[in-house]
Length: 346
Image 1 (cartoon, rainbow, N blue to C red):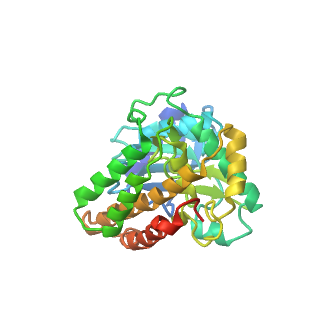
Image 2 (image 1 turned 90 degrees about the vertical axis):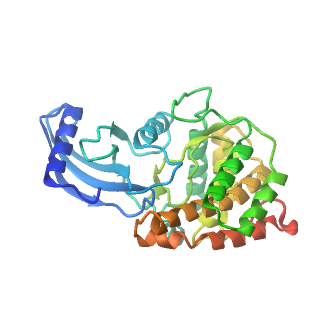
Image 3 (image 1 turned 120 degrees about the vertical axis):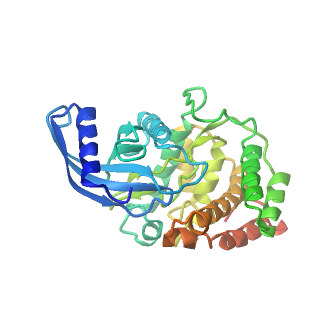
């Protein structure tokens, strides 16, 4: 949605007017937001006349990019998970509505309340004026993840999610192998890592709702602390340690490489928050396994993103540069899977 025509804006305003039971809705400002390699996010400033929402509303309209990643959820599916997270007490933007009528803007979209702060990983890990006390922020992030994991197959049912896997590690590894087989490109380090993951696969445990992309860069902070957990398009049932390993992986520490919890804090602070909220003790050996897997998964996603540039014709610099990232991930995989490196991650 590279901007809307006047007719498209009229259709959107009428759609929102009907949804809000208002007399009218007008768009005072509309601008694309940075970030969002998988989706497009637009900031909307709305004036609502009449109805329960009368007044002004700062919102984000979230829709699909021209090309995407195969495993990404649809906007309606993501919206349903956002509602469940909101109800579970997770700090997410308030979900307002989801529209699947393609006649409005040409594709599905959802609308949520806009929150303040920044999600830029490089800035968050460098600027100590953001996020408040860093260990307190890290502990808060542990609590937030635990609240997400309170959503289980026993408490919620989502028709669009695959059944909880009997063995999450085996299922995730099979999915990565399938993507690599389809790409048909020799990547010896990825083959090595897959073998390591096969040989060290942990015993299966019960599934929870995994965000699958809970990391620095996908939450927002302001000067005082956390304002929102973002980007739910990869969520699904899995081992809770997969989310924990992804958050702690070196590839998401940005400038804070010596701060294992997302580049912002310590493992201990994250564990305090997670374990106090969930009552579940984190297993460091399982986390290490999933950190290795995180680098494999990010390498595969980076290859897919590169294909959006090289094959899909989506000529954006971010996608082109992301396609160069797998080599960086391969170095980390070799470091973590060397015989002398077994054990808890750095």
